[in-house]
Length: 76
Image 1 (tube, rainbow, N blue to C red):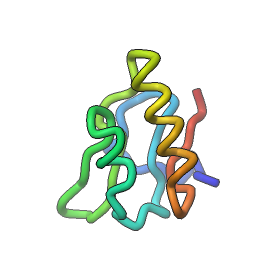
Image 2: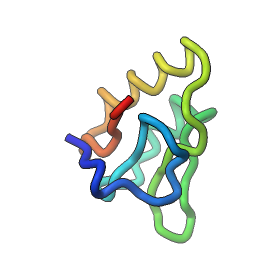
Image 3: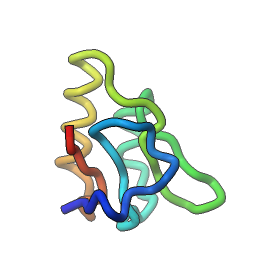
Image 4: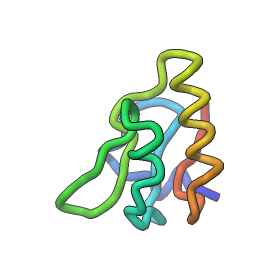
């Protein structure tokens, strides 16, 4: 389970976030590319933009559930 105390500072403010457990696997970026980006220097994903539509929220929730290391959290 993602830990809000370990969330990366690049995450956009809001409920969804990526924490330090991220293994840079591309699952979130491939499936929800409107909301997740890669920090090239650190080699991890982060929430670039919080979901604004129902479709974006559904995609973010789906990738949160699919994350192999449970690095995506939702405190919203």
